[in-house]
Length: 346
Image 1 (spheres, helix red, strand yellow):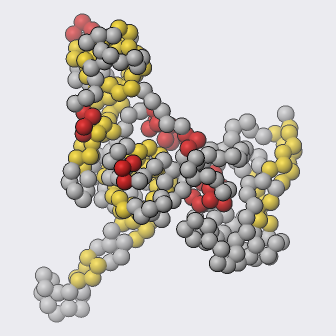
Image 2 (tube, one colour):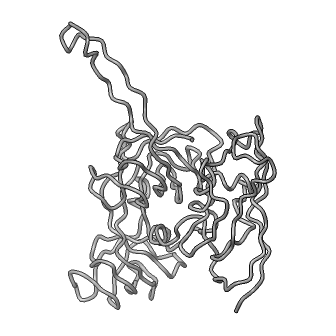
Image 3 (cartoon, helix red, strand yellow):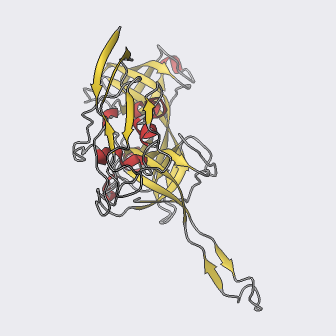
């Protein structure tokens, strides 16, 4: 069924000297005159067609960053028009407006998300990390039904540490590789390898938990964490209010030395205690190398050296935080992200 919609993406004026948040927001020189929203678009990807810094579209909508919610709904079929008439130029200092449009055509009922939800969905419903002080406190499978080596769906696990819990639904995981801070060399936690889900069927110590789903085989020694899920509507991009200096620990689910590209998930050595929160955008930098002056006549170990500057090459969006570790989605990257790369407030 066709429906007529009058819709405004945003109305803004960019003038010389006008600053929004951390600086003037400017348009791309090749910004299109109009764009029809397509299925599979995200607010980030749409903004990338118009803005040099696409992650800052939320600032233009004057969203309340403390509540981080989006009052607008955008659907495939909506038309975004860049009005060049008011000011007549795309250069900084021209008045620029994205105007309301009236269209009459079939529209999808599925609103355009802020970022690709299918990419981070598994990471929202699964445990990602167990922190050091929580390892020994986590409920643990001490035995399996009929002493089976491994359990699948329908099998019973006997769990120590659930005697007083009223929680019915649990996630089952196995501690994986240690997450080591590249700077302090301290272990911040352990990667959680998601195995499946279970449901408490009989309290006690040990309690009986029936396996509901199994992504991998489940056995004695595996641990449980209460089911929980952050709200995806909160993941709108914004810059940290303070200066953040962090480093990439690893690419989730990969070998310690592996690199990752766009849409991969990177573990960061900073968390909520350092001021990181869901929706924070950080810039990626590759540390500059130290090179020996090639014109020096001194031996290599005595020749003067130059410290090359760090090179910015991408952006990440933090979508899940723990006390000392966070996880971020790689949104833009001109080169693979590697452990040890630097992340800063953009």
